[in-house]
Amino acid sequence: MTDRRRVKIRCALLCTAVCAAMLTPYPVRAQEGYRLTGVRFSGVHAFSHKALRERMVLRARTGLQRILFWVKAPPFSSSILERDLERLERFYQSEGFLHVRLNHSLERDDEEGTVELAIAISEGEAVHVREIRDNLVLQPGQNETVIRGILAEAKPSLRPGMRFRDPLARAHRNELLTTLAGAGFPFARVDLELELDDAESLVDIDLRIVPMYQRRFGEVTVLGDSRTPAAKITRQLTFQPGKIYSPKALEESQRRIYQLALFQYVTVRVVMDEENIVQPVEVVAVDAPRLTSKIGAGYGREDRFRGSIELRRLGFLGGTRRMRVFARHSGLEPYHFNFRITQPGIPRPETQINLNPFIKKEKEPGYTVRRGGSHLSLQHHFATYSDAIADYTFERVKLESGPSAREMDIAAYNKSSLTLGVMRDNSEPSFSPVRGSFRALTVTFAGLLVPADFHYLRILTEWRHYLSLDEGWILATRAKLGAMAAQKGDPFTPIEERFFAGGSASVRGWARSQLGPGSAAGVPTGGDAYFEGSTELRHPLWSALSGCLFADFGNVWRQRREARIDDLHFAAGIGLRYRTPIGPIRLDLAMPVFEPSRTLQVHVSVGQAF
Image (cartoon, rainbow, N blue to C red; front, top):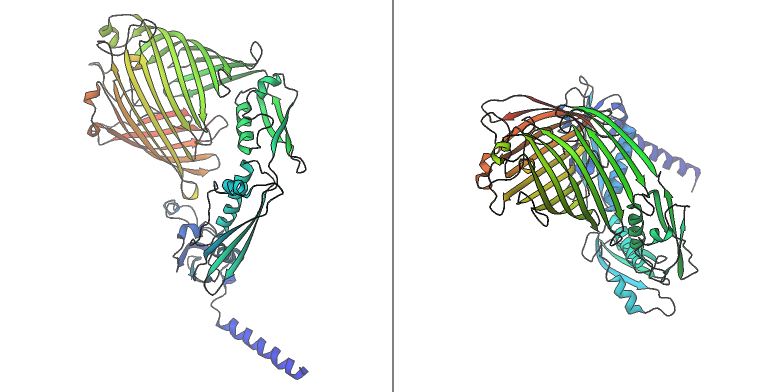
């Protein structure tokens, strides 16, 4: 090529670039210093607009945020926009849309100093899976039928006919690796190769699976210089030396040891050695302090000043036993002394026994009682997040005041009861859940085994759910339902076991226990049927401060046959929460709705309402 020809080509390229620049709309970078008021998408069919917005750094105010008119729109940045467009293109391609095209335009308002972004997307045809081939590379002596049987237990993420997606391809590979590791093949390898037919928009997937040799657990060594005998620790293991290696067995063993509540942290790990079939196991358990104390104080509108002290002793009288001494004072409990001994690992590693004598005084709006007795309970962890409990209680009760003190015509009485319950709780974090749910059911049979003055059947169930919404919003919901009935000819149930509603942790439009039946003098008497629920919309405001809108409903009925769904009462309100290490400090303002007379209720407490 001659020098003259090279010069002509360079000039042509330069002219093309200049013309392209002149034809390009107002440059993106000219919008610097503006604020972004909105992001619009067009041509989108495969995904929601919300899913696309979540993959962008540039954000405009959402519909909920626009309510907060004092909050300014976020600033616009052209450099961030360029990266966002690249990010969106990669996202589409990872989801099987290899020929996606993105175009954008900006609509600016010079007077307001704002800009609105519009992104037009041409998705193109998606790539689908045509065939998935598993190619086994066996080691000498391995049985192909056995290995394929193990692989058949995997739940495939990708199947022929599905749209190809990078996340699903990775999940498919990881599922095969997890299944093989769970069957004793922790060193297995799975390689994934793709063969694309661009003309047909189809892809063939070749999986090269090398299981290696099956491994087994070896000798178990306990480290950490713990005061707890090694035999007590290894008793919690869900495997024995010589058994086939399983990651789930390691995780479950670590959880069981940690639940002894004797250690600061616990690690159960395999000393991986690819050259050996037998893998040694190390258990590292570092002791928690043997003696701890906790002192607390606070104030609430219902319980007024409250104070508490707690002492814990680990390894009480040797072994894995724990001891807890607890004392509390508040306006609702002038005194409460509680002593508990916990013996874990009896009769099974996932079970514990509690002996819990107590004495306390309860001063509620509807009654005042003194109670003393003891609980003997058996708690069993039967699944992840799930526990069952059986509790037998005997107590002596002295009724000092209350409407039923006259109707019962006795000042002191004995009670005995057996309570069976089941609970599942995967909500997190503990003090202010943002995800997960809680479910519980308890059934109490009173008047069993030991002679008692009252006989009744009591059922209570509770459900709570937490859902994370857009931009930090949390939707929390709760429902509680209870019923009880006197048995063996008893004319009524004891007042301290009845249901009450109203208060900071109940229907907040009423003061504590004020929603439901009462005496002629307006003193709450409680009832044998109960239903209440709440919905809260929570959102962070600034730093550790957050706010919420809530609506509550509920009622208590004297007898079960009086309960009607059209006899519910409703309340609504707003609240503030200030996050602290011991839980949020809570202020709620609530008022009844659909009521002839309405009084604003103010609730101050610690912890979420639910």
